[in-house]
Image (cartoon, rainbow, N blue to C red; front, side):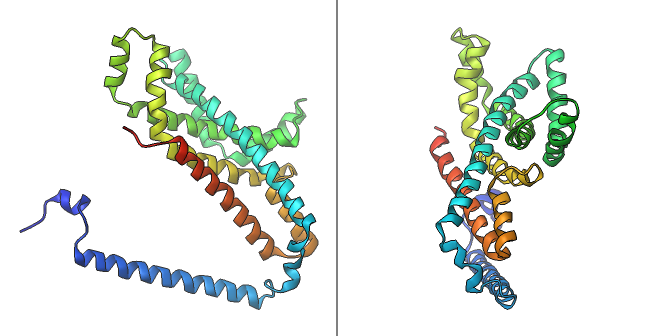
Length: 266
């Protein structure tokens, strides 16, 4: 007797399927371990794991230098996130507006910013704006393009969350005599945020990683400072491993913080 489709898709796996999953997991873990061992061996053969390439990490000045770069990364990412969340909300409201005079320009801005690479926007701020008399600091040459590019994606994330809120919530709020603005900001948008927290966190992680474009404008962020250490000590692999660990810690902290903001829907 065949199992219903719902049981196959959503039910607990059968004993045979559980065995297959365990075998596949063990095989994948073994392959990853072999790959990691091969990478470590190649690093060792190239001499990148020698003590002389790691000893400068015992100096306080090294960590102070990396710390300044990390602060630069966090400062740029935090402001870019604020720009993206605020401007993304404006773009989303414009896209959902009933007036075509508001809706179509909002759609055009969203599509333009989504389709334009962040690096190209940075070059515009770095090369084009100064030629017309608009001079920005290196901080804003990096932060503003990242914020604008992310805002377009955030606007679509917001819109997906708003459209996911059941229509009955809006109708019930209107029946209580609330204005359209009150319905949106007091009823619809708070519920939409709960749906889109994972997507927003993913965008914040991308914002942090996009700050590595700081080398274009010589902004003192983490990756830029890492390149300085590599140039001075010729420790390519050790520096990049440490910097990668720092980026992972920052993104892990963002993910942990998001779990406090987005609780389960009731």
